[in-house]
Length: 213
Image (tube, rainbow, N blue to C red; front, side, top):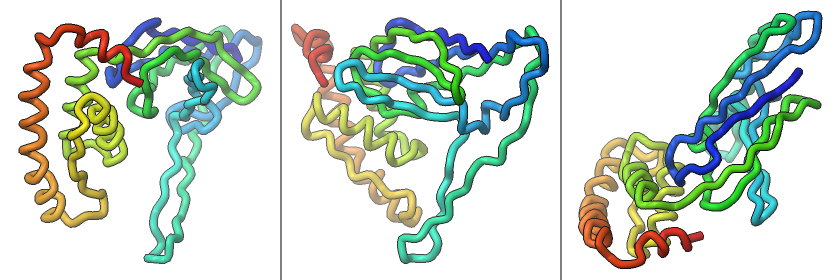
């Protein structure tokens, strides 16, 4: 199988980061594989050039279910759905790396693997900008976002505004407690929004954002 990857050369932190992946069958016989939407074999990689860390994900997801209160979990593996790529044909998928990874500003090398096959490498730069701050703030204050995603956004905002430490409700908290947390965070959100508006005219803001790591 031949894998081709295309992605934006430069993007901003917290903006959707689609990876355009084409799986091609250059052979003369049909190519059978698991549907990429449930596959654990098709793996997307973003290699951080500064740290060497390989941030990766698959489109298929493992899920866990607690078994009682003794720290035991049942792991659910996605059921593969077979599909076929005809000779000379291709299959396209477009996962969003930002939605699946906890990224940071920096230079990356993106590539895709499927068992022994590997795509072309694509250099990718992620920058922290004013748009990033707006997107991170929207994520941090959205109670519909997963806890881990809100925590990631809050941590980045705290590097800019150290007092940004909202009290985030856990997924297991009762609705009343979750509502209490959200109500308690509103003054913090308001203070940050006012501070950020004032920062728009501050000299050197873009340079300060670019230095955050």
